Length: 417
Ligand SMILES: Cc1ncc(COP(=O)(O)O)c(C=O)c1O
Image (cartoon, rainbow, N blue to C red; front, side):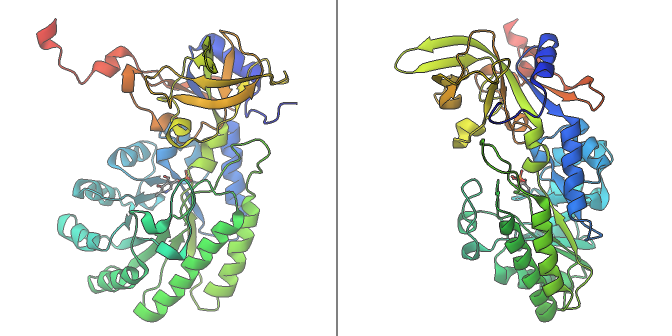
């Protein structure tokens, strides 16, 4: 038995790799749908619960369309993400615009689409008013600073550039009210890849407490609180997937204890997860092309950090399954590397794997979020294709691989013919 099962049958991966050149990202529609369904069912007690999928995690319209069908909205952080969402029919308050250091043009595009604008700073009240005009509904992003710990990926809130301080929140809502804003929201994002359900319950409590205090001190009644994204996934064998029911039960208990008695019911609850929505349901499929034995042993594959930069960027663990050798003993210790001229272009370091031969297919797990989307073109590496394994077993090319023409599209070769 493989120690961490793939989301897609290895035989299917092999069949797809016979048809499409590696490397490619492959997503599993069934897994994405059933996970989104599980999250929505867990929060069914909250009538207006909405998960705004963090588009940055997997910015592909086919993925957004699936999540839209499952009742999700879109969390956008840029103009491009707003346009992508609009193309699949996600507009108006189905879109949350959570950006930072935002140019006026992007606020204007968000407002034009009726998106919920989430302000990252108190000065943005005046900036938005001056450049775009204030919408009817405005949200603030709260940074609790020393009051919360954060974690390794997202860092300490105190050191993070995002959001308003506690004092600024009160000042901000007062200012908005004075300027005629009628509807209000509150957002925070203090976790990333967090596997402890209690963390999200604590976040809800923090926001509920603020909702009560804001109502009392500023006479502003919040319409929703957004707990942010950050639900983690079990990247490592042996880690346990988070139980959405545990988060939901804790949030519900806090809601009943804090929001109802304060007379603030109904208060909508939303989240903007990316990783847990698509991460486990995507794999990066690559082929071994070289073996090298110097001071250490290496396996060189045809994907590189441009296809998945998480391991190189922050030493993130991504499990690797050698297709056809799922149950073979892991008797060799290797670094699995790509071809970039950067020594951190490694998918795994000192990883115990079954002996790998040139031509073997490797599936790199949990690449469905913050995978292809973080890609880049350094060393002239074109970004790979994205494929979707449909529920009916068919395979759809949902993004073709880039070509040299794509890489060179912005260059002017006129003088060099
Ligand atoms: C503002 C904001 N919301 C949501 C997310 C999604 O986070 P995750 O994919 O960890 O759920 C991110 C991730 O960078 C973010 O910056």
